[in-house]
Length: 436
Image (cartoon, rainbow, N blue to C red):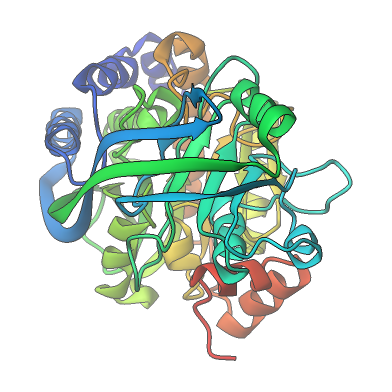
């Protein structure tokens, strides 16, 4: 066992791949950069020893950023368009809705207004309210524009997509502003008429999933996944270059331990996650769910030192994580809740065992994520290596033929979403996958 651990500690494979990804530049879904990053990942998986490394393309709704602007009084405020915002200009009164909790939309008249909301949720609230949920509350209540204010200081306007699977382009123009610009707008222009405009090229495009394999050629398989795409305003080091670097590092370690694998392990770098989990949804809808033993989805790893595994209510995924933590006397946080906001969800919604692997973080929301500050120097190679050791053991354990990971009934997952107060928001955003 110690030999492979030493190899991971000495490895620079994952970190080198992370550097390659951030140096691509724009990895927006459907862009040339996303394609280049997918090709680099395919080649890195092949070099690691995985077999049948390949790309599988699929069509998506393309969106390319143009200019955007907020004009208030005689001022022009710095902003960026949110991906899949429509190409549109509106003039209307600004309504600062603070956190923009569901009840705030019910209690405030926002008809024909431009609504501004924060990117976080208050400490007293029992769940995180996602950007898209706030956006569609605004749409449903008659707003004509949407301004998303970062809660993180540092003059960093946030990005993040709008739109639904059925209607990929949003209904009203949407822009992100920094904490500081948001404070200025609220102080000087709340209730005053402002202008928001978005210019964007909306066009057909193509994304792709990356796939490769290790281990025996069993019908059943464990998926080790990440997403390759990133928002166009940043390097996307944390979200999610680090996750894709991790699957390359895991492929390298598991190739050395291939004889320990009793179930096929498939590595998948999904495309177009940031615009609605499109790549993972395409994969999930075209495969037999019963052949997937577990999904280990890496999205948010490396940004902090201690792993957190959100186990989506699958007891075996939590038990195996606890066993690995005990074996290595190294902490792994486990969260049994259901979380629908990364590529594991395309499988979990169907009852397939899946977990979301990230890092424990003290701060609310995404931190540097979805801003221009998502850069590589905020990450450390030692964290990648340490987490890779734990996750290598986690995948080997899940691939053990003696380990059973039961699928769940979709009715039970729906009940979890209801009990966690997530169902209403998912219905509003068009993400509710079940018949009511």
